[in-house]
Amino acid sequence: MSDRRATLHDVARHCSVSYQTVSRVVNNHPYVAPETRERVLKAIDELGYRPNRAAQSLAANQSHVLGMLTFGIENYGPAQVMIHTEQAARAAGYDLIFVHTPDSRVESLRAALNRLLHWQVDGLILITPLTNISLDDVRSLSGDYPMVQIGLERGASVPSVGVNQHRGGELVADYLLSLGHEQIAELAGPDDWFDAAERHHGFVTRLGKANTAPVATVHGDWSSRSGYHAIQTLIAAGKQFTALFCANDQMAIGALQALSEAGRRVPEDVSVIGFDDIPEAAYLIPPLTTVRQDFAAVGQQGIAGLLQRIAEPDGEPQQTHIEPTLIERQSTAPRK
Image (cartoon, rainbow, N blue to C red; front, side, top):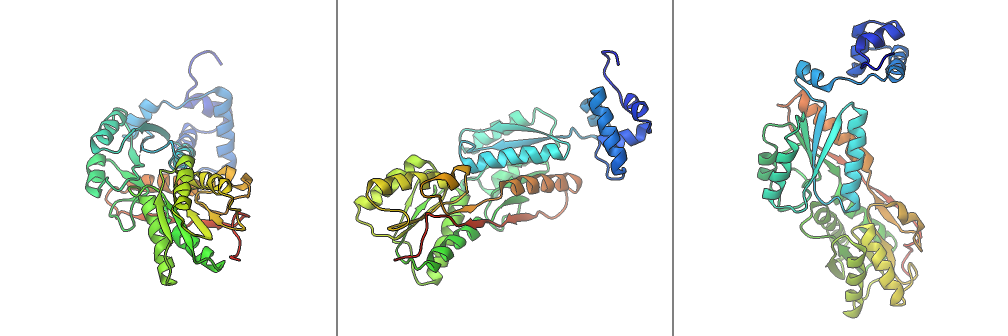
């Protein structure tokens, strides 16, 4: 081949199929035999063919580009959602453009979204996990664009995908109660985050059904540092607890350090459970019991939901809840 750009016709001649067949493969059309699809993809790779996105956009009135507005990606959960959403978009044949906003004011979100919409995007994914962003704000921000929200309160009337955080809180309460713990402290996340509020509500509601309640609830900011200082505060206040629920693993790391410095053994004196199942959780001392969130499923369902909205913009908005899983390790034990 010369230095000129390879075309669909070049690919068709190279693997002895029709131009229409190559076009179907490039556009992810389902009705192509697997062996033919494999042969065409191999030829595309050998010839270095790259789709002309501009021409495709004009022909189909689509750019095959999706936009994502993000907030809080310095935290593990939102960062994982962003990574897995990009992977799911790529697997579906779409590019994903990110714009991050450093604060949650509606004005900042709108400015970030305007930067995003300079690109011709087919739809939007919003990661705006704070309670001060109302549903009216979400609708206003997205305008006429097909949109899916990642993480939102249950029952919201906009398309959304997220882990069932309420159920995660219930899993923690049920597990600690099953171990015989009654004096349970809670290190909750920021009270203006949907995820933190849902985890807290699920936890205390399930404890309430067992006629108990947290001996204390303190709030951190998701960081290990805040977990460390929160537990120092509880100990200094003389709070007695045999179990501790931390609303994320990072705060649990700080809590483990504070408990160690205070001479409280884990799990002999205090059982500790986190939330997220970060990669390091299995390698802490002791390995951390936690609640695993399936961020890959969030990304996949988010993209699937958005593509459905693009195909059927007038369809009923759907909420998809992905169930969390409790992972038992050595940081928890039956109450002595």
